[in-house]
Length: 324
Image (tube, rainbow, N blue to C red; front, side, top):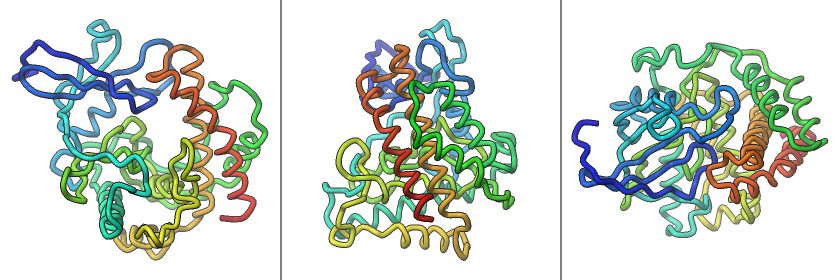
């Protein structure tokens, strides 16, 4: 890598359950390394080369990313494919209630998240060279099939609520409306790095699940945050006095997104949310399976996250039972 000078020291970040991530301290500066985990992996998972490609394409757009510096596709160097990117010094908010901020600051953070999400979905994928980054059309149908298959491949025991949720999303996939955008796939507050002294996002991170897809999937995935409990591992906003804290409602957040995107509303919102619960449950089941197989980035945390699968399935079931 041009300009790189050692010696170097690597320290693993505690967060993240998929691709192990390290802070690299070297004589020439500070970097971040993302690698595939070792061991047997599910097909198409942990695609660090796709992360590197999408970050490279987004440089110079309204979507802030760390600078991608070098991709190594030779597994023999450290045992798996990896890439290096620039280190962004800023703030990561792990609790969406934003207890570390003043009341008047919280709304500006949510407005910035909304702005960047709309900017992401407005990227001209052909202009940035990502027109072949995913299959066009029928996104929800393909994703339901993919994550249903991934869930079955990593299943470790029967969860009747999950079986029922899978059956419902399979039976209720909406007709394709032709919307295609670059989607992040894991757009949530703790995958955003904010400037140290301003409500401005300086990098969106963790692009492993990015693809060409339906933009409402990203929006619904983030809006699960309003429905997940605040206590425990979920770190959601359910049960939080959002008005007292100065946080927007889910309805206001969706309305602001629609205003930015020139939309009158979101069709099939119940399906989009139910799909998000199903998909997250399938992802966490894969995290649990990797831990049991000895391939997890953080085994103890991975097993802990795996315990959330039944609750996510129950929440998805309540959602479809109530119609939203």
